[in-house]
Amino acid sequence: MSRPSVRSPQAGAPAAAGGAPASASRAAEILAGQGRWLWPGMMHYYREPLVLEEGSGVWVRDVDGREYLDAFGGIITTSLGHCHPRVVEAVREQVGRLGHTSTLYVTEPQVEAAHRLAEIAPGGLDRTFFTNSGSEAVETAVALARAYTGRTDLIALRGSYHGRSSAANTLTAHASWRPLASMSAGITHALAPYPFRCPFHRPCDERCVDALALDLEEVILTTTNGRPAALIAESLQGVNGVVMPQPGYFQRVAEVVRRYGGLLIIDEVQAGFGRTGRHWFGIEHWGVVPDIMVMAKGIAAGLPVGATITTTEIASGWEGKTLSTFGGNPVVMAGMCVALDVMVEEDVRARAEARGERLRTGLAELARRHAWIGEARGLGLMQALELVEDPAMRDPSPRRGQALLEAARAEGLLVGSGGLHGQVIRIGPSLLITDAEMDELVERLGRACARVE
Ligand code: PMP
Image (tube, rainbow, N blue to C red):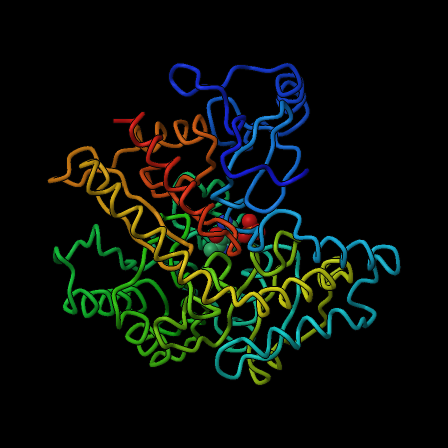
């Protein structure tokens, strides 16, 4: 796919009334197959799901030729845009040389990928186990925490999303994402920081950090045996709607869980790899070094990689055999090494910070224009708009969330949905987005907001 001009006249779906794209033959045919052959429980965006075929940079094209500016990147994953030529080339080269080994054999791309992670990870985190997804990386992290501490109880935060496997799904604290919830024992949840909806004080202040730390302590003393294996938390809650902790929060809860002998696991699946600007990882904004860190999504610019990194001491706590058939596959490892090269060469941390400021200015202007945008928030290129029914009451507006998602599509813009009620619009484009593309993104979002108004 050649990169379309920023103001492509054919960008987006036709401006049909209500923002609904007209059904087109190829999409309709493929959607019929989806409906017949795949699980009905699979969740899709949009009243009429989007059938994508090609991508390049921040642009994607559907099977009927409509182009969209992709501001969500396949759930904040295509960190270098779609089909970055150097990543594509590395994959092509490796798949033609040696496509699969399993972890029973050693390959240079896997060693190289782990070495690179150790170079950018905070503190003494330098031992990695590779898997294929965020869920598996979370599962690996909590299993290791249990093995190392000899304890079973895990604490997560309300509103968190950690994955679809057994423990990861039980750690997840969104009713609608927990169909398997009862399957994993020994998991409870503490209150999460959520300044916009703080249950303690509005506006939120340092007293709320004290209250959250107290709540964690109470959860340890009332819902565990007092000996937690770990607290797991996202450095910024992504699925919950890009929810940022108050300054000082992570220092306090790290102190509490460690005082009770537990580890701190930080989930960087969404916030890692420069996404939040200035730093490689979200947790670095809060000045805390985790004991175990979980990564996936943007780690390899769209290739399926999960990674769990920790210290030599904690990694040595794993007893018994372990392997992964596909984890650390040479093809995705080769792609990941090149993706990390590009991230360093392009200085994605600085780019995300600069483009993030441009985005923040645009979102703040939209929030001024529309009273139903309760808050514009986020860091770097992980930002969001929280939509409310009544600005004074701040009651969540899932209906506006849904309407804005559809309206953005009609304007040729893909954004994400989030929040417990679907009241948040999430934005996480390629870290290589240009200023002109960012301006286009904000302009399209502005037109979509006007449609919702
Ligand atoms: N952790 C976080 C913070 C996530 O956002 C996700 C996915 N949305 C996961 C873990 C699970 O990742 P995956 O879908 O790759 O299993």
